[in-house]
Image (cartoon, rainbow, N blue to C red; front, side, top):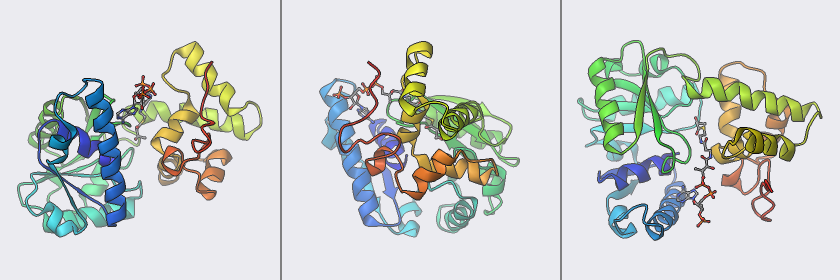
Amino acid sequence: MGHGITEVIAIAGYEVIMRDVERQFIEDGYDSIEWSLEKLFEKDIIDEAPDNVLSRIDIEVELETAVANADLVIEAAPEQMDLKKEIFSDLDAFAPEHAILASNTSSLSITEIASATNRPEQVVGMHFFNPPVKMDLVEVIYGSETTDETANTASEFVESIDKTPIYVRKDVNGFVVNSVLGPFGDEAGWMVSEGRYEIPEIDAAMVHQRHYPMGPFELGDLTGIDVGYHIRKEAGKPIPPILEEKVEAEELGRKTGRGYYDYETGDGPDYE
Ligand code: 3HC
């Protein structure tokens, strides 16, 4: 998600610094942005040359340096509350006083994340969807102390990068979209774990009957099986065994080359 968010912000004309804990992770993200921009340019979806867009992206490993002059920081770390709080405490120490601190969390409490800072009124959720470059919606989530000024600035920023914001005023687990998507993915997971159906059958049924762009398992592979796993674990929800098995095997979806489908052998979903 980090590189996808970086990409849409750079396409919109902003200067952006992409940061991760290891240089290799950032370079992998940078390569993905390069690939994506080439595709978008070839298809006239963007009219600016990829190199120009890339020239607005800097990379940095040191958090303190990365956020020293930021107006807005968007965190997209794994879905673990302790980790998020540690990061927000550091962001509070290192980012300028005026900076808004946003979390791309999929489901965790913005109120609790904000409690790790001395500026909870300037902490907000900005929840993007995967892949950000193709997904229009961004949820702008209030924590209990988020001011209207912060949420409105976040919302205006979302519009300025050509996305559609919706306000989520109740800081409930999963916000709007994942509250609906979660049970859908859960049911599909239990159906396979209990041996009632095969993965391709369920995916094909949802694509052919509901006209979804992809079924729940292909979607899990796209968003990251570990992301869904951590969302459920942090919420204390039962986890379908098929999901646990994939996480244990480190088959996390497209990013590892294999998940519910095998992308290395090209044996991906086939809806024909
Ligand atoms: N950048 C540039 N090009 C991309 C790309 C990207 N990030 N991703 C795919 N493409 C390219 C493909 O490579 C392909 O190129 P080609 O034709 O040259 O081979 C082209 O786009 C067309 O791709 P597809 O035929 O696969 O399909 P579409 O473009 O029609 O749709 C999709 C792709 C937008 C991903 C669509 O399948 C979709 O909407 N899927 C559902 C996604 C979704 O629901 N996301 C939200 C998940 S929930 C979430 O993220 C929340 C989090 O908290 C968990």
